Length: 618
Image (tube, rainbow, N blue to C red; front, side, top):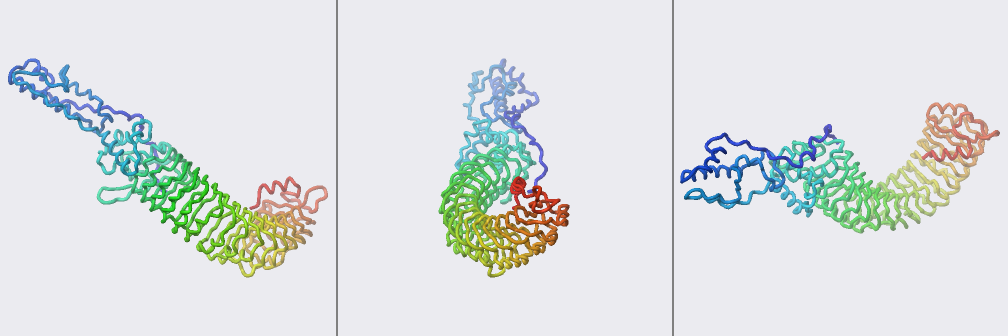
């Protein structure tokens, strides 16, 4: 987002609430000067006097009726213009008929109703447009001198140097932007170049307009992301009917989303993410039928998703994560054929897997994590949503066994099912996704042996930690040639590490801690030269550490504590502490340690290990 440099607002509303009339100087004195008029009124008689008096009074009335300001007027018709007193004889009352003068008295015509002031014309114009377009009555807002709407109106009438007429085609949108400025505490914005200045509103920072022929330019985009906006969205924002994009993310806007949003039928893209919005999503949002992207995440929205959202058949991206939304999800979600991503993470949904989502047949990204969805994952997810690429259902209460074919989906690259209560033996299909790269299923209740790998796998991340798996690591794990991270920690796995694992040459993070592996730490681990983190702690390894391990020059973490490893930690391993290595642990504690280590950052005592666990390695 490019903006011009900001500066303080050129106008202070408080100093412009009421401006005096500009006094128009009297014309050069002639036969109708004030002294002449007095003389005529006091001493003239007969027809000549009557004629003279008629001309004099006529001039006075003409001057009184035509007295205006050069550029500004008071907002109230009833305010008396005292400057005209200089033109009137003492005691003269223009609202009474002129007294008889001579044989042919002049009868003054009855007074006519003076035209409405510019203030009232503009005020009524804006009220009428607001009522007509969005059904919002601004009259009460204008009656409150402290309301942002009233401030915007007073700026338009009294301060704005453009001095638009009530019929000007730009009046409505100029007022709406001024109202937006005052509603969102524009004085605190970090960038506000040209706002509330005399230049055209289409030149204000963050405003984009489009020409619709002639001199008709309409605002189509408001882009003020990360600009320190506070306050609330104006209730009349829906009257900006030409808007196509609203980009106001990463601000501090509070309050609710106005119902008038539904009138923004041309809006394609809305970003209100990372604000302090609260309340419910208004049902009127279902009238925004041009909407393609809606980002309301990272707010404090509550209530349910309105069923009217099903009217947004062109919606492609719906992001509502990090709010307080609750169940049930509307069945009308199944109408959203164009939807490619739905992001509902970190809310308060509590219901079985939402089958309505299965109707969004073009869905590619499904984010349901950190809620309370429960029950089984339906097998129909595979056939109903064949385009899925990224599925995140972690941190729920999903149970049972995931459908076997879920792992084999043709376009699925990311699958997060961790932190649920899934329970079954693992199928061999977990390795068989043609493009599946990241599979996270830790902290569930999977049990039994690790399945064999039948062919080379696309997996780059496989996390099966914190389950109930047992037995040995299959020798076929040599086919996991693309793995960068393997986490089998906190299971009941045993036996030694198969030599075939040395073919996992791309591995960077290997977590085998908290199992029952035994035997010597294999020397071939030193051949896994891309390792940055190796955790073999809390097992039953024995023997000594091979010098081959010193080839792990990229290692940042090497943990061997709580085992039965003896001897001495190779001195070359200690030298790695001067480069990348940050954590090196072994059972070097006490007067008679299992292993000698002069450079370990932690020895196998409880407090040191607790500290290591707190730091974390994942």
